[in-house]
Image (cartoon, rainbow, N blue to C red; front, top):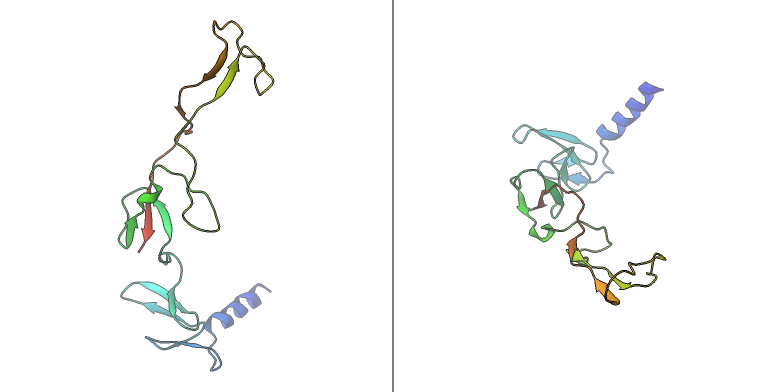
Length: 146
């Protein structure tokens, strides 16, 4: 059974038929593989165009993080500086804040059911000073594929 799976996979990858769409420059049939000795990369004909197989074939517009400066073919994506990514159906919305505060009534039951300090000389409300809410982090360089 193991050999049959390999045979079937090979037949799909290397089959050529006149009913399949073709690639050009160079000419090829859907499913055909070719090796480019100049770029040292393997390419697959998808029926209309040749595409690199495996690593290195990042789509234009892709945003990725790097531990070094952006590599050749990528541009620094400064829109991510000081931000964390949040998944969404569309790009561009922003939110959040660098700092936050809390306000509580002094000398009364607070919103969480606990007592605030009744030994404070003045009753009223108190707002904490602004502070960062960042957990420990590691900075990376965000880059976008040209």
